[in-house]
Amino acid sequence: MLIRDAMSTVILTLGPAHTLREAATLMSARHIGAAVVFDPDAGGIGILTERDILNSVGLGQNPDTERAHAHTTTDVVFAAPTWTLEEAARAMAHGGFRHLIVLDRGEVAGIVSVRDIIRCWSPAREPAPLARAGS
Image: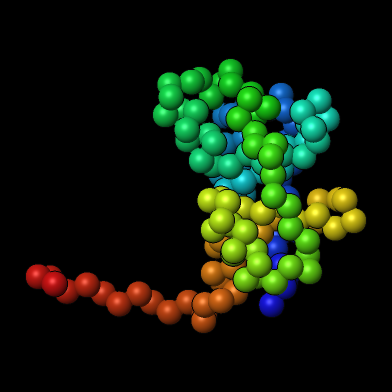
């Protein structure tokens, strides 16, 4: 299976001046863990993840004044829509990240997450077995 079969094509895009609270609000409303940040002054395309926001708040920084550009990863590994899910998983495992921005002809075409890959590799959801008392 290829990335294009698993990726989300509805992408949250932010500008560098968005606050972390604005980013978190938008990400939470869409139930997503990453946003693409377009910042022409910092090299173009970056990614802001829920972990970036969590790390900032954990350091005591104010999410109402911290800007996306200060927490965006700009050294991004990009994927092509023709990559296999195995190639994407290998890149994620090697780089220690959970999201890949997918570029097609230099344009953002989608984003794929570990969850997307797992969803493709796993059978339809079945109820988890219940734990028994004393187990």
